[in-house]
Image (cartoon, rainbow, N blue to C red; front, side, top):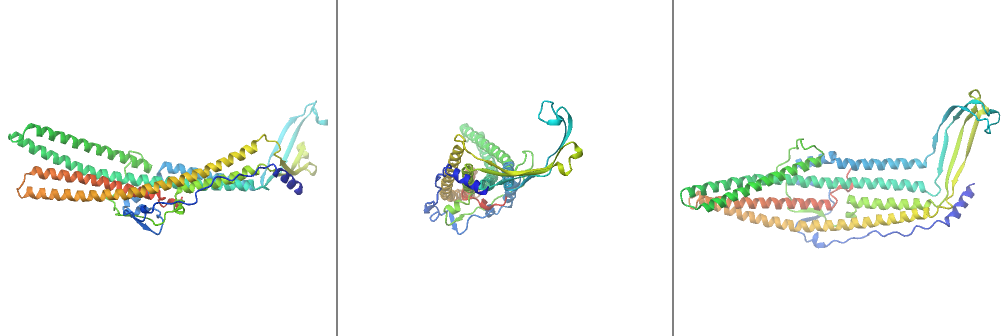
Length: 470
């Protein structure tokens, strides 16, 4: 029997087409050295980004919010459920390599037809009993189709785990950027409120000058328009604050009416961002999305082999023992014992092109998985290069704004000194303070851009989530 099965397999092997060579995955990447070696905004190091890289901001409030999001965000829970579903599929597929046994016991009251082929029982009513001891089934995995299917499901499990890490990476980035935006807009509201008060002081002084006949009414109209513009800008910032707060609540998985945890006043803003000194394919492969693409290639490679094994005979072993009798009194006596065993062979002789079509389908799916991986690598390269270039120019803009703010602050100090000593009136001092405050607000926005650039760079480098514990 064993030789017969192998002979049949060899005969059918001649009808099984070979798996064609698939698409080629990227093996090497290059980045412009100026983005890492000559970039004043980065500090090359010897290690990849650590987990929880955002602790460098030294902001306990931020750390707490990210932890809350990673444990309570609904989208992340969906990704975890998908991982659990993949784990269940692995468990199900592993059962293919095990012996399956079940038991069925039946007692029926049945009348046999007079016209049936039942000999002396025709036209009589009898009680028929069947007591089946375990019925055993076992699939002989000669062609490794079961093991390949298990391997494909295990790869799918790893792919879902990587996608969960990717979801956690993007969630942490969203929380960090929203948190910084909310903190910044609160500071902007404080400064804009001061600007509104200063413009009101200007208006009061000009109104007094108008009442004394020292100033025309046109200047009052202009000042009132300035006040309205300042109040509108304040209202826009307050609206922006509410939007940021609701966005942060959604990321945390909380309802809008719930209380937002207290956040810190200011984070420590690093002057340079530490990145790995060598950015190559090994580092890019630590990104969760690239990991998922790699596991998808492995999954489809195993499915190709499953489709190829379908051309060979499918062999199962069956065995059963039990008791059968018409009439319960004789059911469990030795004469009622029955058994059966033997192989069941499914020979795929004429499939009308079905198996060939399934094989070509698996080959095309494999090629698609490779192309998706290559696309993910190219996207990673673009995101990293964009992030490093943005870091460089955002840092330059921030430094320029810092210098401009320093100049406006010096002008404000000079105007204040002139007012305090009586050399000038209060109006020049108020105007200089307003200009300084507006420059301060621009600097805050540039600081936010710098923090967002750091977050984008960390996200592009994988954010330390390549080995994040699930």
